[in-house]
Amino acid sequence: MNIRSLARWLSLPAAAALLMAGSASAADVHVMISAGFYGVYSELRPAFERASGHRLVTTRGPSMGDSPEAIPTRLARGETADVVILDGGAADELGKRGLARAESKVNLARSLIGMVVRAGAAKPDIGSVDAFRSTLLAAKSIAYSDSGSGTYLSTTLFPKLGIADQVAGRSRKVRGPPSGEPVAAVVARGEAEIGFQQVAELIHVPGIAFVGTIPTELQPVTLFAAALTSGSRQPEAASALIRFLASPEAAPVISKAGLMPLSGR
Image (tube, rainbow, N blue to C red):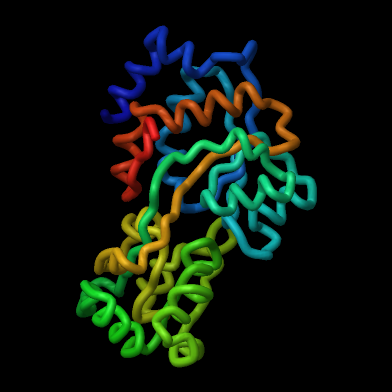
């Protein structure tokens, strides 16, 4: 379903009921969202606002980490948000800390970690665990994000492969949007030979070549999820947004962004 078809669906009574259930009037819904799902959200946002009458006020930040822009940091210091859309594990942590309503969490999509090189460069072999390990050891420089995928690489994957010490001096953590940039932008400028991030955050950046996803055996189960914050002032309207993003009708947009939709799961 393309955006035009989605807009037609949103005009139907059933869709209106889905979006407006429990919501008496239009509201400003404050959304905190990480980069991995932002492309999907941006494409679907206008249709949701037209159909529901709600206005989405958006703040971007990493799913995790201790930077001032990270979503957990923002919530902990009392910034306004009605709903968060971020890494599923980070959503669980927010629930444990009392910053999000754990029972409201809905998984939206699965994400895979991919690798890029600069456009025109040779694409290394990452088709097996051994080949992937060799590529990492041979790389002159490695870039990864300061959010969920980068945390997994630096704290879990590199040690698992027994190469943490060997690559430490050649690895660079990249601060993501809003004040930073995608890992792929660093690779496109030639500042890193290879780069890793969620596929959805890599594939639309110019100046890079997508090599592929890391081996299946090494992929973490990374889900993007949405949840109401504990301090949500517009829980009904925020819940309508979550229902919309989790609906089967949103699935084609999710797939186009390089994610695996989880509609109905």
